[in-house]
Amino acid sequence: MNLSVLSSRFHPRGAALAAALLLGACAVGPDYKRPSADAPPVYKEAPTAGATWYPAAPADALDRGEWWTLFNDDDLSALVRQVEVSNQNVAAAVAAYAQARAFVREQRAGLVPSVGLSGGVDRSGGLGAATTAGNRFQLGVDASWTPDVWGRLGRAIEGAQASAQASAGDLAAARLSAQGQLATDYFALRDADAEIALLRTTVEAYERALKITSNRYNAGIAAKTDVLQAQTQLDSTRADLATLQGQRAQLEHAIAVLHGKAPGDFTLRVVPWKVNVPTVPLGVPSELLQRRPDIAAAERRVAAANAQIGVQASAYYPSLTLSASLGGAATTAGQLFRASNALWSLGLSVAQTLFDAGATSARVEAAEAARDQAVAQYRQTVLVAFQSVEDQLAQTRALAEQASLRLQASQAADLTEQQLLNRYAQGQVAYTDVVTAQATALSARRTLALLVSNRQASAIALIQALGGGWQAGGSPAAR
Image (cartoon, rainbow, N blue to C red; front, side, top):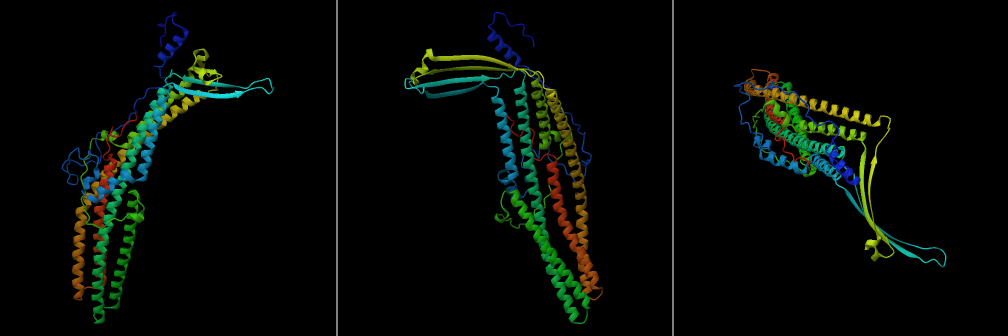
């Protein structure tokens, strides 16, 4: 910077201050530029025009924040909304964000001079009899300021702001993760409820089949093996029912913890399962870089790492400290405020490291390597995000294509089971055929129920992969 405009008529003290103020506009280290990250023009697994499994939907369907309302389930909505308040992982992320914002304020405080007040009183005297004791009162005000000549504090503030914004992204990611996990567990629990009801109905049917078989055996029409097979089928189904009830309890416990409650204090009632599978609209792939909170957080960490390069590089230059003090000393408290007892001082100190065996350059190189690492992590986060979207699109398509086929298979298995039961009652087929048909029908019914749950879970995962209801700029910036 050109300092030739300073006149030699200026007082040296003023010249030093002016130089410091002018140099304060300098900032060492590289200015931040957002790292590039390739975004494909389209999603590879996106539905083609006219696809029946992915109907068109309004483009702004997910921009209203509460993505879970797409499932039209009041119980789910009430649970997910409570995550914001009660989930402890989200609470920890909120605290981390508050801590990051406080650190920004701490860094900014370094730009302002610090002022201190000191005072004291002491009494002294000699040991001889002729020496009288006396009091001494002291009072002073001290001020010091280290001008940000080379932009070290500016870079530190810049890094702190970026870190706070990264914490805001972490908060959004934690919130989205907890919401998505709760919704997934909720629909898995509803699937368990549906399967429990199915197994209870099946147990009742198998009990009737066992009674019929026992009657036929007692009448000498059926073999003992038929009764044993019917009993085995009934007991196995009862065991499956007990297993499923245990799984249902575990899912309820998981939802309780996500809800921020102890499992013993939480119960989720059994209600009819709403099997709505919402369509999730896709934006252009490049929008993913702004919508995903983990991507935004990773990018902000690159900015924070970049600022640290300037912080470390500032050690190459001298540091300046301006100090001033005003105070006084007197033998009585009243005399402290007399002008004749006042003392003042002004000072300017300069410190420069002359030799540190390359420690400063090593710290700068380490900061540059940390920035390069953050860039690589950012780009990897972007790649994983696109993979997640493509995976969920492929999963959504596969599950949707299975839906009609599984329904047809279940209906056919039910019809086969009923026909074989009728034929067995007429003595036309062996009971082994009935058992096989019953097992096939039950498996088809349970698979159909699980498929619905999987489709809902896939929709949730796709919403999460697309960034959910989080929007770039939605989180408050650190100021």
